[in-house]
Image 1 (cartoon, rainbow, N blue to C red):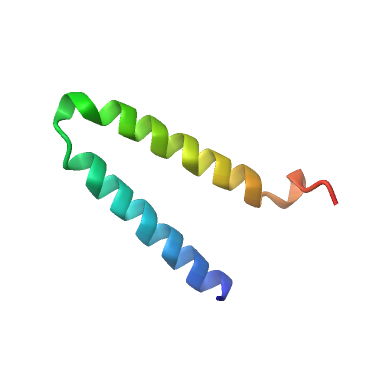
Image 2 (image 1 turned 180 degrees about the vertical axis):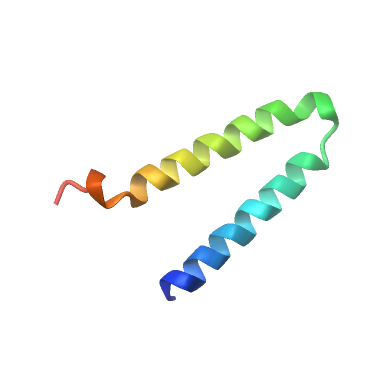
Length: 54
């Protein structure tokens, strides 16, 4: 899978997660947004070449 394909898949996955969160009642969305933000932060940290310990 190319980097472009991986980026498109990640964007689709994020869009799906946002759609699921936005389908929740308003008072239940905050936890979903926090979990998504944490997941995205972890993915970014994992993919950051400056954080690699090679």
